[in-house]
Image (cartoon, rainbow, N blue to C red; front, side, top):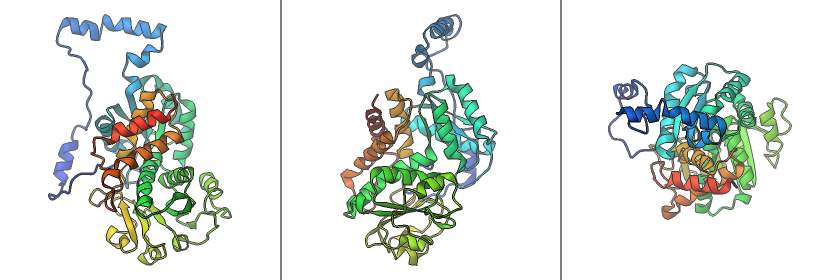
Length: 389
């Protein structure tokens, strides 16, 4: 969830970080002055009663006369926070505050964090159903797999508003955008490519899903026990579902076997990949080592075997950063009045991000900077257009 910045020459100190976070990173401000009795009478009693009465008679005015329709709640149970793991709801709050700040800065949307002291899927769903009048969209964040898959499916079914688990789909959208341009640079067609994904958690499964939808020739997923294939009897229902529609050539074994003749490697796990295994890949390979802060392979090593290298870090070229995707995706969905974030909308977002790098496409520039002011509006427009609303 880090934001790419220019190269930093002065180390960031612990004191600087804690001083910046003291008191939190968010505040709520009124959109109108409250400095006269007249202003108070309009903003609050008695004027506000007229608005409430009108909404009671015409519920559609809830969308136009409250902030709910432009408010994204960032929801977490604190079970998979950054690289820290299961640290609990309270400890996750600084991260969720940061995510809400990113929504405001890069999507122009109001956002508040909502951390829940439960890991029970049904309890989380019930909580959001009861709070539904207070918000317009739900960004699920840092929820451990495989519960995150079940939770997202249930929240989508329970609510009539856009819902997305960003760790899954935001990552997948930016990976697809980056892979689109990496394939262009290396002269590859998607339908001819074999892509290996290391990691079968939330991000790995979502990447496999979007690459399959986009027409990648073959996708192989690996987990801690090796290649996922249809004959394994130790797979949860999510992995089993993808075992049935990936690994076209029924490759067995471990990561080394999967990388034999592969065109691209996408790492979204905490594992390391040996250089000799990367050497098994095709010439001019594509390597996205996205574990953060420690990539599966360092870029200088990866560059010995790849024409294009990306990481999840801001101190190397080609940062795969979710902030390129999620603010614009939610903004576009809300602008369009969409009730769902669909596969078509995610594909449109990826295409929009990829196109923004066309002006200076190179091996060190396959996606725009998250600080590029064109990104949020371009993604929002593409998502709104793809919504069909």
